[in-house]
Structure formats: structure tokens, C-alpha cells
Image (cartoon, rainbow, N blue to C red; front, side, top):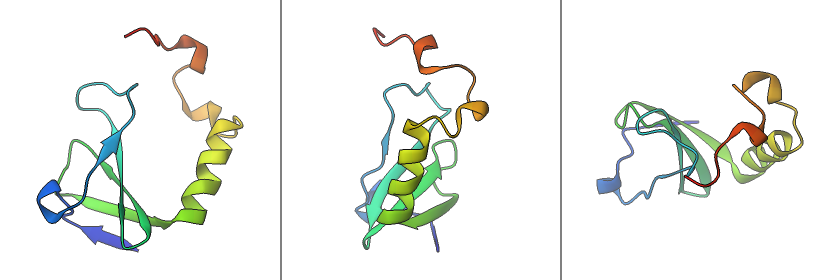
Length: 82
């Protein structure tokens, strides 16, 4: 499912990781029981929507290291003091 143009004005509260740079982030929000994902550089661009189960399965995969090959460094490479 895709929602287009979800903005803070539409009552959706977008969140991003504290590890994010200034404008290079993926943001998530909840709407109509779905988890919505967008590119923070394109606030009015396309939004992907996933069921909570789909998003949960993805997060579990990320936490277990299934997607490490797509990252620019292991979690130990991040500065958590910033």
C-alpha cells in the first residue's frame, strides 16, 4: 500500500533514528494501523506502508544482522556519544 503526501500537517508524526544525519534519513510514522516509511529529503514524496507484522519482521531481521551487507559499517562503528 502507498500513501502519498503524508505530512505533519495531516496529523502524522514522523520519527527518525538518532543516528541519522541532517537530511539523509528514513522516517517512520503510524497511520491507519500501518507503519509508513519515507525518505526525509522528500517530505511530500511517496510513502511506503507496511503492516505492523511486516515492519516487525523487518526490524527483527535488521537486529539479527540479516542486512549488515547493506550498511556502511557495523553498529560498533557508530559514535553513540554524539
